Image (cartoon, rainbow, N blue to C red; front, side):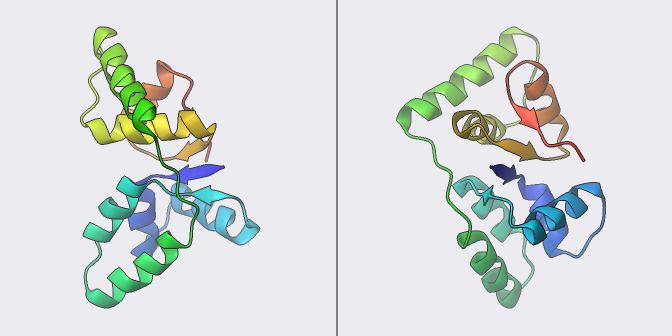
Length: 131
């Protein structure tokens, strides 16, 4: 399973190019299993310019299997954040730990170019998709 971070989706919807967008396009065309976390749906849809883009984006994102954490999963996301802080790693937002924990719980790879995820992967079992 592949979970695609918000920034990659935004780039894809905006028609941008780059290795992460190319990897997403490859996954989509190959029929790879791509999941979506609720917070990613929100983050992506917030950034779409007009109602048509919003509805098109909504249709694409809601067609993907939803990857959710239960209460214990959210507690583990907080534990991940606390562990990183003890190791001197400051993650800019709790949402990144929720997304990382979602991947960890589902044994999914994360497609992202975000530096926070790279730091999380360095100190956890989070797998970043190679591009």
